[in-house]
Length: 96
Image (cartoon, rainbow, N blue to C red; front, top):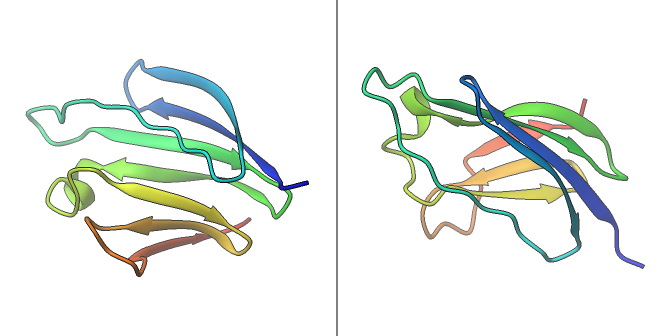
């Protein structure tokens, strides 16, 4: 049986996107706008058989020009972020 990952994402403001349990190979996505002051921040808590942690998934000052459709993958060694159409990650959060 393939593993599952539990994800809980929130914004620095009042957005709580709820808890989602994903099976291997599934994805979760949402959309939002960046505020005028470019302080938009979304962070997610991840729990998997490999580890857990809470990481900044979208930071306006880092990601506004980095990606329009940001992609993250949960792997054995942590959470990996990718720029548009990339096959290699450019951000890596190691499990805590």
